[in-house]
View 1 (cartoon, rainbow, N blue to C red):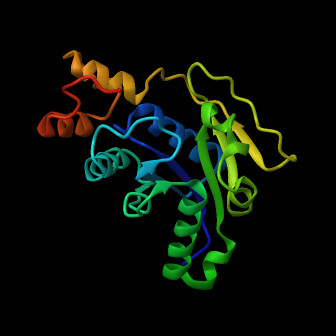
View 2 (tube, rainbow, N blue to C red):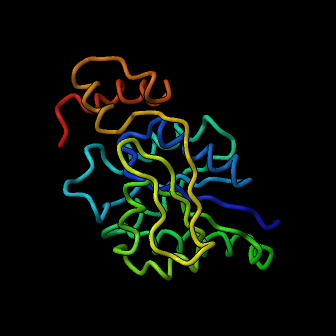
Length: 206
C-alpha cells in the first residue's frame, strides 16, 4: 500500500446533498486528493437537536451519495461509536484503521480535514483543536451565508477553498420533501429514491 493524500468530510448528512459532494470534489481537485472519506456523525456534539433520520439511514444515504465519484469512500467510524461525535476521535480512529490495514507505508499519508465556513469560524472552540491540527491539515470551504475566513492560526495550517455556489442545506431538502416539492436538483437521484422508499422527512424537522 502506498502513501495517499486523504480528505475527511464529516457531517450529519441528514440527508447528504450536492453541497457536500461538490465541496468534497472541489477540494479533491484543488489539493490533488486520492480519496475523500465521507463520515456521517453519530451524535453531533454541536447540534441542538438530534438528526431526523437514523444512523443507519444516514449511512446508507452517504453510501449512495459517495457513488457519484470514485474518490469518495463512506465510513462508519462515527456512527458505530457511542457518545457525541468529536473530530479528534474521528481522525484518530481513521488514521489508526488506515495504519492497521496498510502498515508502515501509510506513515507518508497526508490528511486533510474539510469543514464549512460556519464551523471553521468556531474551530478554536472544538475539542482539542491543536491536536486536530497535528493529525490533519484544516481545509475550509464555502458555505452560503457565511464568510470564508481562516481562524487565528499560524500560516500553513489552514487552506481556504471557494466552492462553486450551491445554495442547498439538509434543512432545505427536508422542508421541500415535507412540502411535496422536487429535490433532484439538490440531492443525487439515488438518495431521493431512498428517501421515498423509506418515507423519510414527511413531517417538518427541527
